[in-house]
Length: 107
Image (tube, rainbow, N blue to C red):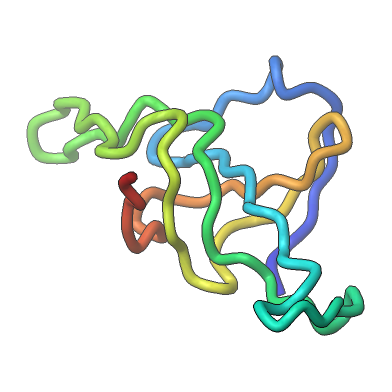
């Protein structure tokens, strides 16, 4: 499972380099057939919304900054064990590298 950290303010949290802060979508509490699921039976969502992004990575050959391809507000898909879990102002969030994101969800 991913690591857990704790801090106090989202305003003071700024991801560095190619890191991204994501708010994971909430788990479904009932099935399509209307059956309510207990907490342990809920599947951890693999989608979320980007809350903040770093500045990008440095090209080691030229020294140029390579900006990230994702932006704040985009919905993304990532693998089950991606990122590091943390809690900011009572919200459960994830910090991960851009290369851990599998796709941008449009629409």
